[in-house]
Every structure is written in structure tokens, then in C-alpha cells.
Length: 277
Image 1: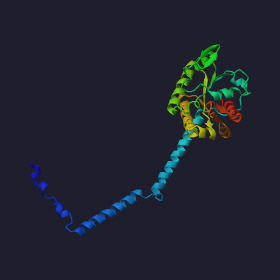
Image 2: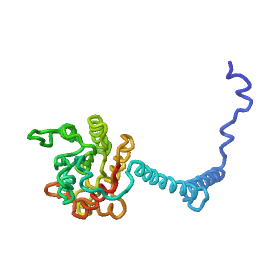
Image 3: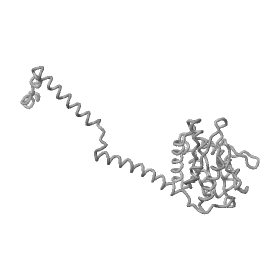
Image 4: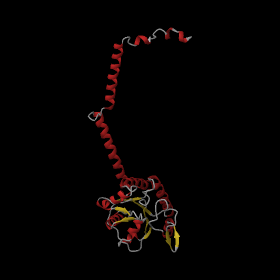
């Protein structure tokens, strides 16, 4: 048998020979093992902030974060029209705005001359905008898509999202808006489509309504930005000082979305300044 081969017996160890025969020897071995264990734990747990390896790691993280921000900025520049002279009301005579309470508030601004189509209601949200008959046109209840198809605008501005931030996941919101935009593109293939960023909310809203947090809203806007890239449509978000003014609030009693006059002015300035031609 192979186990009887000299290979299995020539260098066999006697375990009794490996164990110290005196208590003193055993204590020495245990002490050495304990010291070795302490040294090993110290090496693993001790913060290495002063080491060049860790400095390199920290720098890499910093560069990674900066790259992510730069990527978002580059993406926004790619899908945002160039800023130009503010357009007059006549420019929007062949435009349509689709959205929620925010668009309803925008429609009441004195800038408009009555030639622009507004499909706006507080009931509108990303989940129901495609299929529910939320609007009335020529005495009939119609969906937003039917109203757009009947009117045939050459520019379509879509503002949906804040009316779903509290209960829709980011991916569900993106998917719903994506479905709507694709149907608009199918029905109006020559129309310019703009997706308007979701505004942040004031501190009072964030304190009263935990589901309305600006960090969450900003992450949703990132998803909308990526959607604009995917579908090759325009993305509009106020810039600079106007961005800080573009802040909404939510009535805790009625859940109505609200914009101050300053916020509406900042929003309208962006819409008038960033156009595709």
C-alpha cells in the first residue's frame, strides 16, 4: 500500500516532541503567540493617514468625486441650449407646457399673451400624465398626449416630478417620464422637447415633510438629466443666482405645490433665455 511507503514514514513528526515538556516552556510559547497577535492587530487597525499609500488613496477619492461632478456638468452642457437674448411672448405661440401646480403658477405670469398652450393641473404627476384624462379641450376630457396631438405645438415643455418626489422612487419617476416623452416624440416627431428640472424646496417644507428633501430632489434631477441625454431632448435648469431663487414650497394642508413670484421670475427667465432656436 502507498501509505506503507517510506515516503510517508521517513520524515514523520512526533507531536509530543513539538510540545514543550515543562510548564515554563508552555508559558513562553503562549507569551510569544500573544505578543505576535497584538502586533498583528495593531498593524491591521492602526490608522495609516501619514503613509504615502493612504495619501494616494485619499487623492484618488477626491479626483473620483470631482470627476463625477464634472461628468454631470458636462452632461448638462450637452443637453442645455446655449444662453441667448430673452425671447418675447411671441416666440412661445407655438409652444405647449405640460405639468403640475408649478406650471399652473407659471401660466399666470403677466408675460404670456394668451397664445401659448398650458396643460397644467395639480393632479398631474409622472405616473398618470400619460393615460389619465386630466384636461378638457373643446368640451371633451382628454389626456395630455391627446391635447398635444390635437394642437400640434412645435415646442413642448414638460415639468413633472415634484408632485411625485414623496412617493415615487427615482427609477420609477424616470421610467414614467421616459414613457411620456417617447410618446410625445412619436406623435410630434418634429417638435423640440424640453424637460424642466425639479426645483428644490424651502427649509420649512423639508422640516414638515420628511419625504421632500433637497438631497433626494437633486438625485432625481440627475436621473432626469440622464434621461435627456438618452432621448436627445433639452434640459432646462436655472443657473447661478436664478437657481438659488428657484425654490418651491408645499402646502402641508392641501399638498399644493407653490412658487413665489421671485421663483417664477427666475424660472421664466431661464425658459426665455435658453432656447434651441
